[in-house]
Length: 304
Image (cartoon, rainbow, N blue to C red):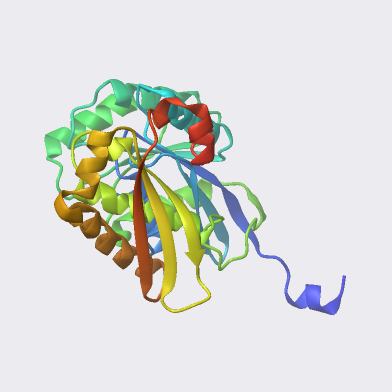
């Protein structure tokens, strides 16, 4: 061993992968963004915002928690949905611990049952977190906890608000203790293994979700065609893929008003990510039935 290796040993501590498991809109991506202290995962009020696994790396002096944000557990209606559920299975199957996140503002239903069953089948420690404790009624909290307690009687339970970092501290401490000991798997200052342009594509889609309603957001995929970060402002070009001409007309809007609003919102998000001004150009393209075409899903990097 050299002197430099002795002086700068690779950090060790509690290290492992934690699968974030929950129904759509339970708050998994919000929790991840809060824990990391930056906007990494796309967040919206639309269900099924998360479409693929995303790694978020949280570090302390003696711990490295590798959060895997997976899509929400739901009954798939197309090839995209099936791919999303395969991503969930892979995340849980590779995890060292599972964080089961529940939303007490909604009555437990079929999706909650599927979440609880997957968590109960995991052969690793499972922790239960009841989100939105700041707005959920006490009786709803109690009913949701009782519902999840039946298949997960031994899981420690925490009441949290995914937007409040302070409320997450006891949960993070318990997750750290649930992980095995070993060397860090990533440099302590690394936050994710995703490329900046991949995060950017999700932030552009987040802007679409913010401005569009009903079925249209679910029919949109984003591909980044150019990511020029060697100049100021950054120059980014992206394509918004929809499935039908009627959807394209909605996304473009009368006189281009809708796509212009989406572009402005996306530019603000990208500027925060890139820590500088961004010039974004958007194109809207009809890619018929892309959610049921494995070739398209592979092209859009959505096939698990």
